[in-house]
Image 1 (cartoon, helix red, strand yellow):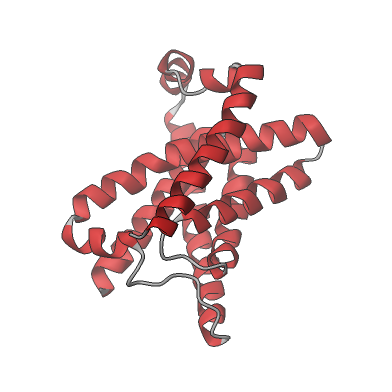
Image 2: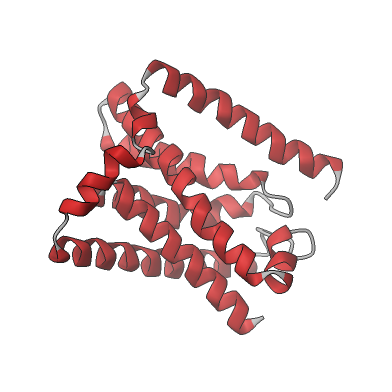
Length: 199
């Protein structure tokens, strides 16, 4: 990883931290969503049927997202638009050398990514503009663009991530934060499994 990659990662993280920090200071209710005392009672009250619906919706969103992202990735390759440089993308090496660590990371990160990009950004854009449609577009665009901070990525990654991001945003609107987190976890796990089995 060179100094430019470090600037990309740190710069994006600091900028996101400042924006999210400011929002959370102004509206601390967003922070409550991460506290177990808030969401644990709700989980305990959920029926088996509700769990099945949630898991089915999340898994369906993950599979459809993966299909759309694969088609977009294939089109990018067809038109020679780079999205990721495997030599410079750190997850390629980590995936090969430490698959269990990568599995843990790709299932923990969605908790925070979904909390920020869906739980905070969608809610704030709806509050600001009153439009779920606009909120979904903004959230999807920001989430996709944020992946440019990963070393070894090119602007094509935004196009590749956008369909999945749109579906995760819609999943959030219809199933809540838990459904979006599950869908994102399923998506990441499926990607990792495919890479492991084909690589």
